[in-house]
Length: 114
Length: 111
Image (tube, rainbow over all chains, first blue to last red; front, side, top):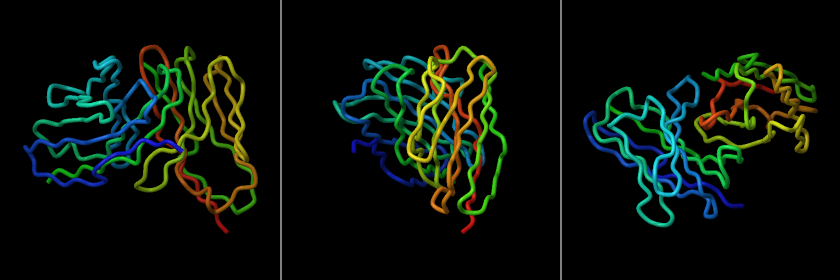
């Protein structure tokens, strides 16, 4: 069964460093998303991406964040200068259609900023 | 702004019991509602998707209902098993906003 794949599963980084989280969405899906979940809190929307551009972003998604689809399969989230409060589980998701379509999530990348 | 609330926050039941998890949302103008399962430290597994025009969806022992006008959904789990132990998340899609999540209900099924 097709699935969303995320790498790495766990990343530890020092405050101020840049990190890139990687995702391979399901191959025939057109919409891609990043969400995050701080420990003990709700899953929060960060950004959606369609047709090689951002279609929606939340207040969380400030200038420290960027997304890219560098090739036909990967979808990346970059955090330029990590802060302690960026420590969270980051989930990539994809859907076949619009926001009306069923979203499928990856297993997540646990980011720990020290 | 859409808000999603799930009650109860935690639930512990003996194996074999039928149970109901509740989800409510503040803005009834939704496109769809999705129920997920999350195991500790793991990703989100989609269980059921209900479009706004639908009243319910069923998958195996799971049945989800949607009452859009009152802003409520329920997830019914029949004949619960220890393997059902997980956190169950409700999320709604509305306007131009992708999924807005509730905090979840942590379910423990005791053998």
